[in-house]
Length: 341
Image 1 (cartoon, one colour):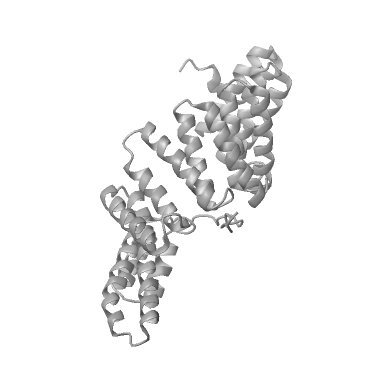
Image 2 (image 1 turned 60 degrees about the vertical axis):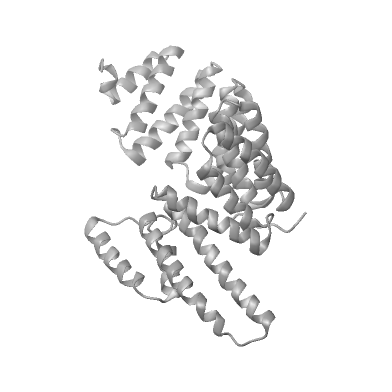
């Protein structure tokens, strides 16, 4: 198997949020930076506008457009390079790859802001350039192929078929533990599940999970998400025992990574409660609903939609189990449950 790039093990920091005044000031600073030709500052700006920090795809697109302009303006200067021919070609190729990397990043940013025509144009340019410079089975070429596939397919059926073929290509060329391979498998699993092809979705997500377990281990967000996805599919197939097995594994990971009262953790707790209710294990169901409700109320407040949804489900559970004493306590704490609305 060829050496593969592993998924980054560190978790993303919290996204920074600003009020309108601060945001306007930041945008003015951004515009000043984008007028410069300093690639170091422009790349730093693009990174700051990424998902790990300001999470602003519009500003990120502006930054990457300017980086591309500066790089393309500098290309003719390479003709002045006076080294040996091989050195000149190598230097030109490095600059071309830098431009291709920028086209790929710009295509991603354009897609996020809904500029699909430019997204397709830049991803196609990146794909063709990578294939010419690095070969069709190179990781960058395959990742650009994935991005372009997501943008250009006209139907779910066409997308699923192309993702199937692409995932096989990636597994052969990059290995089963490569970050791009795993991303493609995860997307394919989601598309299959959404299309009602549950059995195949399970097989795809099992392949994805196997790679994640080797590279990341069980206590990683990507792994926890795949475990949750598998639980959801088994739930659809009414295999509640298997679904609970995956939910419990996902829950352990979420508790370690996010904390016991994080909304994502509580959602997994609530999903487990729903399954236990289907198996008529009302004791376990009540225990999990109680835990989820306390967590939602502490984190989100009594009036949040997630808290209200959990409260309603808990009420239904108590009615089914015949626990009238606990039901009366719940209604006393949440009087709106008696409302007919």
